[in-house]
Image 1 (cartoon, helix red, strand yellow):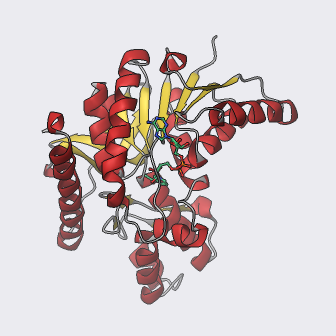
Image 2 (cartoon, rainbow, N blue to C red; image 1 turned 90 degrees about the horizontal axis):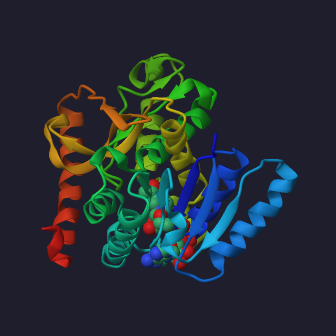
Length: 320
Ligand code: A3D
């Protein structure tokens, strides 16, 4: 059987890491596409040479022409600019919206059957714009943010409680911004919902509150440390988990930015909720029950996303 074809649109920090992980895991042949000449070719050749060490038979190619993504099964989009210290994700909207238009048109022309995962920020608005510009079916265009935000939440919980990350299930919902909603009642340590884990002495309420706050600002913490860009290892791993669920029809339930049409009482926008990803793309959306406090936090986060969508419509009238 032919190997899957994975097109990575954007060959920067996340794009290069995606190529490395996809090749090591032999998920498929990799096309690294970028407007910068030499970067995708150099990274593809470097990883191809590494494949002789890690021993996987996959092909890697760098490209500056969209024709090279033809027939891709999966496209992962990181094209655009990341934030620097002092910037919010929303500051990127003007530049990255134009990039989404070019990328959307490229995918529409050359890889219309692909499952598309957007990572470019501000995420919930960029994935919405990418779906509109590409015209691909809504269940085949998703945004990666929740897997990353939930991974940060899970890691901080593991670090504090001393429980293996494998036995922690953490969930964040809402938009990918500082008002995202870490779902304390739905997240578990060793099977115990977090309020029960506090009662059982795994961590104190103050420690849990601090972890929730650190999760919300987790992206900014890395930006402040790196100074030259934003996180790339964990974002790449997160998108690979989503791509794998699609390619291998794993039907994992992962928090992703997906198109809502009535779920959670919302329509016509992308926002982070648990979604079942299989060979059909987004096959099901899981609706968590929310109490009044969670509902209010979710609504605040959704209002931020709606503000970003309005900003996109103001910049590009074709989106209105
Ligand atoms: P970076 O290393 O700058 O790579 C971006 C690449 O995009 C560069 O190689 C550019 O040359 C390329 N590029 C720019 N314009 C185009 C274009 N029109 N067509 C093709 N390629 C183009 O950034 P990065 O990889 O660190 O981050 C990429 C994006 O992901 C940024 O927008 C980040 O803000 C975002 N990001 C999102 C998350 C989420 O959880 C959603 C996490 C971390 C980063």
